[in-house]
Image 1 (cartoon, one colour):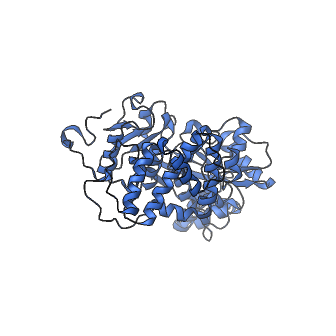
Image 2 (cartoon, helix red, strand yellow):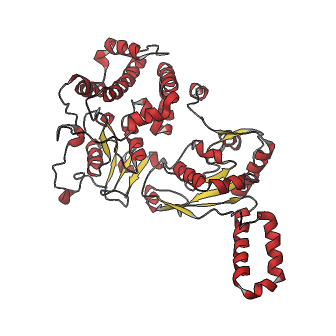
Image 3 (cartoon, helix red, strand yellow):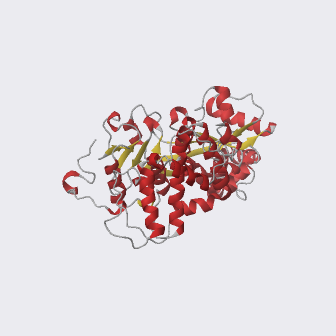
Length: 452
């Protein structure tokens, strides 16, 4: 992993904490949340305030995320909104934290100027001892305050001010006035500078969790389902109509289609579509070449084309399917019939334009793991796990590629890969994304006889 760290592809955009004042504030917040403290004088934190160095020191990678369920957080600066969330156990956690910071940025800026803000993403489930417990998660709310209780004190002062304004006798209540003056010393003038962190809650209808080998839960769609990266038979009874795993390719394809969650990567005959396909093909060539012992350090696209020709007989079905689609996109070739049982199928798809596009692209990246760029962008944890097992030649190539071609224009790359233009008029019922199930949905369900 050292190469990824050196190139800023791992632990990138973390916030450095090296000021004695900030370290002291962090320790006070850490003590209030966990009863622990750090002896480190400098470290790095993510959007939640988690520090990998402190995790090592405490020998507890979950010191702010007990049982991986209710993540606690420590805010020292609003700049944390740009940081990643390390070792996420739920896909929505970073988005919730970032929305909380951005919605309350002025208030948090004022609060963190004097103290750390400590809080928790709260749901009613404290442990997930079995997969069914995950379905009890419906909402996540945020509770937060400074370690000195500034927000709590401000609420008390605001209530007293309202009492003072509305009750005629309050003008003569010396005790009330004295309390107000005392609280104002801690909070300042809350009428001119409100210290308010409003209650915020977030629906958890569709999400991914790392628990039980990785599970995607879709409840907020027309045809709900749970999709497991591990064997679905090990999950037991789940309170959702359909459960499938990554081996149920046809069922997943129908799930995507019926809920209108995906669209083809190559939607038009043009150079842009062809370029995306060729890049995916290059990643597959790199996989094959690395397995054959080739040195891929600094390999260019021309080098990979040369290696592709050398190992043409070893190129897998994923490459062959993408090549057929590329010929359609740039050479006026025939429309390829790539059904869901074809290994290239999920490589040809991306999320359509809907609120859960990131979640769908995350799952697609696991279903098309040879596309290392999409895996890195959409599912960092799966990428790092895969990277650790790659031969050194592939590790060097991937790190160099991501540093050279992704880091320099992240926004442009994401737009090219996942952007949503107006859909094209494409052949009907011929491409894999246009196949329609011929089963009787009302009788056996949208994914055939597949059940829990």
